Length: 316
Image (cartoon, rainbow, N blue to C red; front, side, top):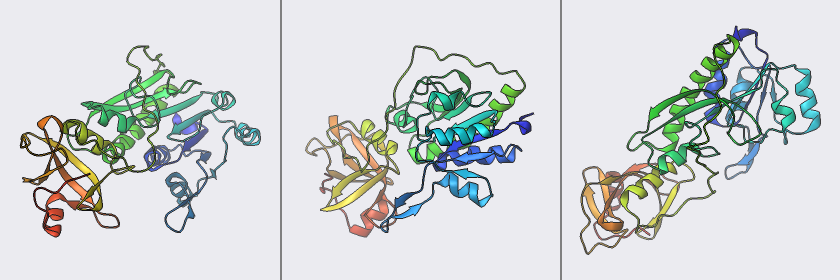
C-alpha cells in the first residue's frame, strides 16, 4: 500500500499545497518537504516563506530549502533517506539526472495541463489565452526533457467563460491532488503503466514576464478578454483611465457592435453589469472587475458609480 512508501515532496507555491495535504491525508506524509528558499516580499522586503513551507511547518513536517537542488551535499543528504519516490508539484528548479534517478520508483510530477499540450512554466495562463475550451491535469514520470516524461493519468475539466487564471489554477490544484494519490496507488499496485507522450500536439507555455501587461485595443474583444483572464490576478493587465492607473481583472466579449465613431479603447457605457469598451474590428469588450492601485476590487458598476464615469473616456 502507498502508506509504506518513503516519499520526498518538492513544491513551492499555493498550487502545490493541496497535493501535499492529500498525501498527509492518505497516510503517506513525506519524509522531507523540499521547497525554494525564503524570498523578500512586500514593501518592507522582509523574508517570506513559500506557502508549502508554511503549511509543512505548521504540521511539524521536516523541511529543506536548498538554494540549488543540484548541490552535491544536498543530493547526498537525500540519498541517505533512501526514498522510494519523489512527488514534484511546481517546485521551480530543474532536476539534475542524479536526482531524477535517486528515488527507487522515480519522480512523479503533477502538471497543470493535458500533456503534451502546454509544456512549460505557465500552462494555465496559456490555455486561457489560447481560448482552449478545456484543460486539466496530468501526472507523469519525470525525465531530463521539460515536461516530456511518460504519462500516468490525465483528467480534463472545462474552462469557464470568465474564469481567471487564479481561479482555474485553484481548481486544477485540487484536481491534481486527487489524481496524484490515484497515480501512486496505481503504481504501487502494478495496474498503472506509464505511456510515452505522443510526438504530435506538443505546445509550449513559457514563463510569463514580470510586471503588468498592456493591451493593444485594436485587437478583437475576444483576444483582449482572454489576455485579461489569463493574466489575472498576476501579473495583471494594466491600463490608464482618466489619467489614473487601472488594473483589469475580469472581462468578456460582448455581442454588441461598437459605434463606427468609437476609437478602440473608448468607453461606450454600461451594458448590463459590464463596462463596454470599443475594441478592434468593431467588437466590444465588457470589463467586469477592475481595481485602482491600493484599493479593493470593484465591479464595473461600482467603478462607474463611484467615479461618475461617462461615455467617451478612453482606456490607454
